[in-house]
Length: 80
Image (cartoon, helix red, strand yellow):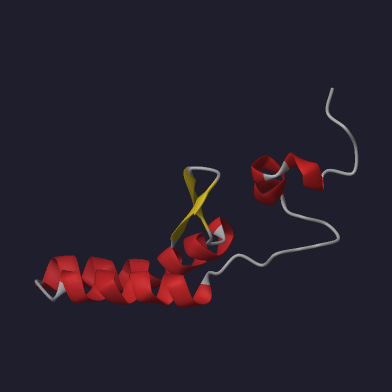
């Protein structure tokens, strides 16, 4: 999922969660490729599953690295 922030598109998905989702779908995707199954439908389900289950949790007290890269104002110290 993408949203415009400061004129640039940003992801609102947890990359760690997306990797886990890819691992879960990898066997099914491989099976679709080898059996001539409906790969497009499988990839569509993966995308839907990633959008629903891989949302980025916003941490107020201790933001993650990606959040800090996007918004350095969340840092506890000043960059010089």
